[in-house]
Amino acid sequence: MRNIIFILFFIGFVSFAQEEEKEREQALNESKNLTWEANKELSEDNFIDAEVDYRKAIAKSDENSAAPYNLANAYYAKETYSEAFGRYKQAGELATDKADKHRAYHNMGNVFMKRKDYQKAVEAYKEALRNDPKDEETRYNLALAKKMLEKEQEQNDQNQDNKDQEDKNEDNKDENEDKKDGDNKEENQDQDKKDEGDKGDEGDKNEEQKDENKEGEGDEKEEQKKQPEEGDKPQEQQQQPRPNQLSKQQVQNLLEAMQNEEKKVQEKIDAQKVKGVKVKNEKDW
Image 1 (cartoon, one colour):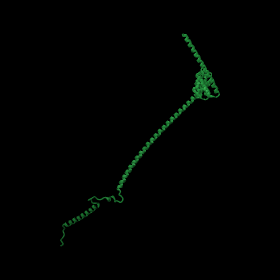
Image 2 (cartoon, helix red, strand yellow):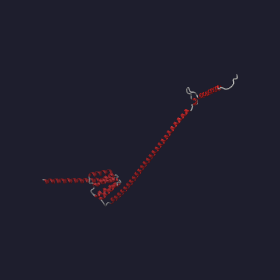
Image 3 (tube, rainbow, N blue to C red):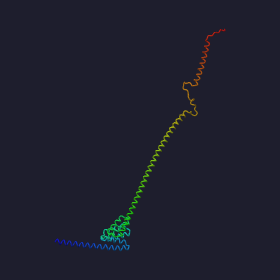
Image 4 (cartoon, rainbow, N blue to C red):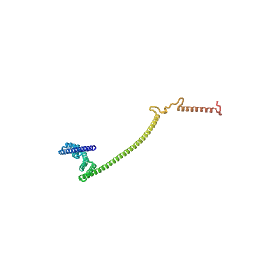
């Protein structure tokens, strides 16, 4: 009983596998037919219909690497390099034959060359040569990609050197400007200090001149006090004697009068002395 069940299960599995294989082959055939139709439409410059049929062919079978590869060629001819790269990559992954892989990676390298991505072009051409080492066209493209990459690196190094030099010049310029600004600032500060010193000296000078002017004004006022006002009598004549005080002229007059009185008194005394002296004379009466 168990053997019968196993046999029936095996027969069912084989039948299912055969049916699946049949469907796979049918899908692959349909994909190839759609690819053929797309190739025909593309040759007639009917890109839109060709693109539609290529996409249908790709969706029908993942074993038909020709469909994405031919669609990638169509994109490449239209210079739609990003779309072309995606389809070449898909074709290289689906391909089981080395020749198909070689063609896919070779054209991927061509896309990278168009995009000037030389490093990735070198890697793509190397992968193509792994699948077909004898292809001279791929080898030539690889040598060209390496040469362009080397030139690009030299240009980048030169640009970097130029940039470094520009940065250095810019730094020197900034440093010189900072130094110049510092010197100007220091010179301005020195000039300000000098101006402040001159201003201080000038202020001291003005203060001295002001003091001299004040002294001059004081002296002038003093002299003005000493000078008689217009229309007034001289100061000597303006002085009045104090109460009960004799003037100089009165004192002089008084002295002269006293001298005269003394003279008269002296004369009287002298006269009396002469009269009182006894003399020897005779009486004439």
